[in-house]
Amino acid sequence: MGVFENPSFDEHQTVAFHQDIKSGLRAIIAVHNTIRGPAVGGCRMWPYANEDDALTDALRLSRGMSFKSALAGLPFGGGKSVIIGDPATDKSDPLWHAMGCFVESLGGQYIIAEDVGTSPADMELVRRETPHVAGIEEGGSGDPSPATAWGVFVGIKATVRTRLDRSDIRGIGIAVQGLGHVGYELCRLLAAEGVVLYVADIDSSRLTRAAKEFGATSVSPDKVYDLDIDVFAPCALGAVINDDTIARLRATIVAGSANNQLAEQRHAQALSKANILYAPDYAINAGGIINIAHEGPTYDRAAAFGQVSKIYDTLIEIFALARADGITPDAAAERIAAQRLCATINEAA
Ligand code: NAD
Image 1: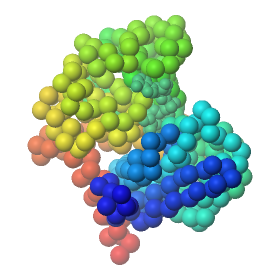
Image 2 (image 1 turned 135 degrees about the vertical axis):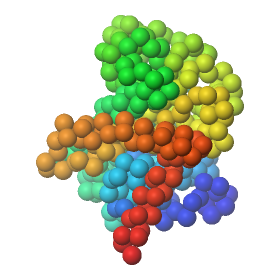
Image 3 (image 1 turned 180 degrees about the horizontal axis):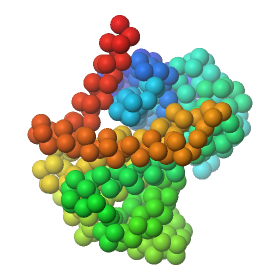
Image 4 (image 1 turned 120 degrees about the vertical axis):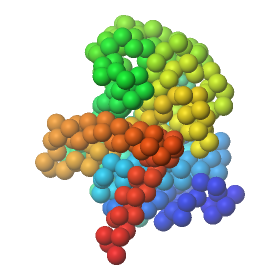
């Protein structure tokens, strides 16, 4: 399938492909737009079954970044890169050298950061070839995951306030799917507030650690949808909200960090119909990118986390608009983000 025929193509500004035979790099950079500033977005490394799957991911994720940054009021456009490969076996110095040169070739249109399958250490290697890197330790704001987790934590409080009419989360049941960089930190925050914590991961060592450290109850990855709890927090991969899982969910809230949680757009309506309040993924998981926006010689972690806390207000605004106009929170978030993108275009005209 060609790029223009791909259903996820949305007038993207640039879609660049690069293959480096020597290092084995096969990568795509998708820049959705740079209306509000350079296109910042993570680099995902994944053993995609084929090039079409990788392209679709890059197109969808970069569009999501445009809306995420606009919704958070940041001076960034939307971009994303994907590397077709297994992060466990295919990483090498030459691969990161080639990826750095690829990013550099776009002249600052795209700024790379870590994402699923990549780490701040990988980004240090990319930095040798290009200055267009965010989220590294030295001279940067470091791993964005703690800020993302903080945003999801305050976002869960906003959804609990709206759906359950409660100002605290003590004693409520929350299941965290995925105990990676974000999910594990989120568990720490939730446990400190006295939630009844359930955890699922395909890596059993992480479950053992969470049980020991937070008193979390482990559930098998397939059973996490069936729990009698209040909040389901997807913090692993996308498309976990689909026909099968919506029918099974007993939680009344879906609020987590994973990108592209809805398998298809229509699942936003299906959630509302099932009376499940959904915190749009790109609204609740914006903490990392907000943290990156504070990067620079005067980086102030407290100020960055203070701005991340505003995700609470953004979600309350989204839920209020959704209720007032009888639309889904997803549609409300998209409307607010689109208004902010248009306002930038009008200001520039
Ligand atoms: P990560 O790779 O560190 O963690 C993912 C975790 O999910 C791993 O522990 C993995 O074993 C687990 N997992 C994989 N498949 C699973 C399954 N079927 N069931 C249960 N667990 C499973 O990733 P991360 O950085 O923590 O990011 C998590 C999600 O949040 C991703 O979708 C990412 O795109 C999104 N996100 C992350 C950030 C960030 O700052 N890291 C920012 C925005 C969005």
